[in-house]
Structure formats: C-alpha cells, structure tokens
Length: 246
Ligand code: 6PG
Image (cartoon, rainbow, N blue to C red; front, side, top):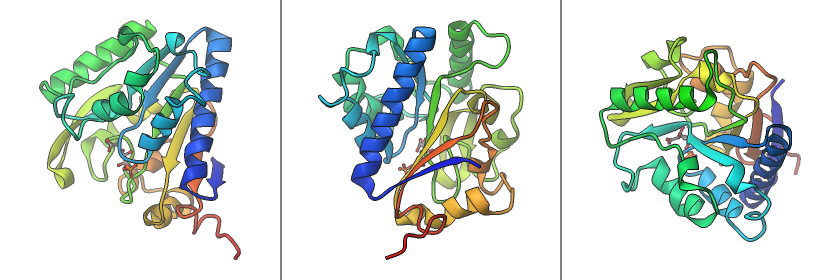
C-alpha cells in the first residue's frame, strides 16, 4: 500500500511536506554526502518551496550538498510565467545557498527533442550510471485528470521504457513538454506526491483504489522499485480515500 499522509488543511500540508523534504535531505547527505532531488512543477509545490526557503528551514537543508533537478518542464523560456524552473527559482532557488552549478534546468527554450536528449545526457553524466540512475527524492504533483509530471493520459510517453527523459506534445494543453519517464521516476529512492484540494478527491481515489488503467490515469504508472510512493495530501483531496467523520 502507498504511504498516505493526510494533513488537516493546506497550511499543515505545506509544513508537513517541507519537513518531509528536509528529512529526506538530511538522510541522503548523512548516507551519501549529497541530496539529489527532482522538483515538481504546478501550483501545489509553490508554498512548499517557499517554506523550504524560509528561516524555519533554510538552514536545515545542506544546500551546498544538494542538486536540484526537474521532473518535467513546459517548453517555454526560463523567464516565462509558465516555466517550472521560473517558479522554483522565484520561490526557492534564489533564496538558498545552492551553488548555481547544482541547478539542473531542462532547456525549455530549445527544440523539445534536443532538450530531452540534452537532459538525459546530463543525467547520465551526473550519475555516471549505465543502468537506471537513482534520485534520492522525486517530487510529483497529480492533475485532476490523473497526469503526473508531464505523463498525460493517452500519450505515447506513457509506454516509454528505454528513455529516461522524453519530449511529448500534449494535445489537451496544445503545448510541448519534456518529462522524466516512468522507468526513471520509479528507480528513485523516494517518490512523493503532493496533492491538495477537493478537485483532486475523485482522481486520488481512482489512482489509489480504482482499476489499474495507467493510460487513463498515468499517476498509476508510478510504482517505485525501492518501496512505496509517499502521498502527502490535505483532507480535502483525501475526502474519498479517508473520509473524515464530523
Ligand atoms: C506541471 C507539473 C504537473 C503538476 C500537476 C498538478 O508541469 O504542471 O509537473 O504534473 O504537478 O499538473 O498541478 P497543481 O499542483 O497545480 O494542481
């Protein structure tokens, strides 16, 4: 069973998720001397990243030993309002002592196929891994249509088993994306979904308890090889999976 942690409200989810990430970082640095994390995009993580950059947390994470990667990116320039990199930079990266060389950005401004290839080669160089590289933590969101990272329903990238990073045109968004693929995400030491809001309640039930149909609900593809995914959710999103009495 996946590790489900239900927080009473958004504020507690933000604090709990920041605490979870800080603890993952401390364990990774203690065990391996570095913390290699892939950030999620979207809106849910924004206050969580800001909390990590706050006085409560900024000195708790060994930023000098941390490497920040991205689970996916919109194919837009890094200063575009839609850029996941820009969101992370504004909320976190500009506010902590992270060496610039430790920020591994997906080049959203170039051709998607070239950006995916370049990122995959950067992953390979960094991990010096011939087999599947192992991130310490990959943060993910979940759309109300069941997508995660840029693994959208009905797209070819859902069936990608060889590539670690792939480009994908997302019809429903009329945009190109670059995304880590399910095999790479599933090779991580830790995977944590951050899900908030009543709008996600039905899909959270579908993904956790519905029939296994990952082409429809791609978040079901995330089955970590090294254990279970962590789901950090608020009570509103958990309304169907863990109904609160009263
Ligand atoms: C992105 C994200 C995407 C996001 C979900 C949930 O690039 O948008 O990677 O997978 O996590 O769409 O987004 P919200 O947190 O805004 O609901």
